[in-house]
Image 1 (tube, rainbow, N blue to C red):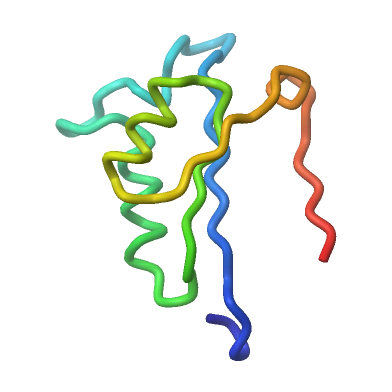
Image 2 (tube, rainbow, N blue to C red):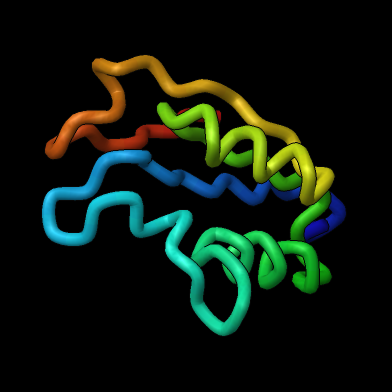
Length: 88
């Protein structure tokens, strides 16, 4: 929580990468790269809910094994120049 308000940790993880294909699932120190991001979010005292958003089923399945929520991202929001805009 931040100022008594719930805080969402949103992890954006595309399956495709131009420079390093499948980088989010590449092993780093024995775990996929995305593991380290999820673990950092879990350790944060500010984050109440963690959601992984991806266009890749393997990433989403991995997120579920890490017991965080997952949301499939539409193809049109998974392109090179796609951005995220959150309005509250």
